[in-house]
Length: 75
Image (cartoon, rainbow, N blue to C red; front, side, top):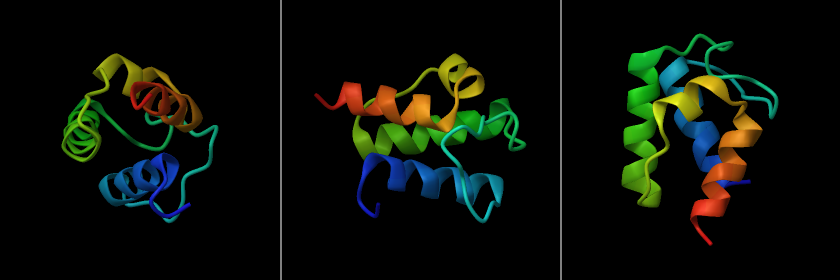
């Protein structure tokens, strides 16, 4: 998974939320995320991938949904 969209996003979430792992159906809020940490994830996604997810997307979707959204942006 290293280098993949999911792998990179998982690293962002794990680092910012201080987690050992992230599962596909985990939600950002459910894992302890908040609006400030969502802004930090959005900033990292923008720097790494070149596009920025909305805070609404980060705060209301599962990890899998965010990965799928990011994959669609790269097409």
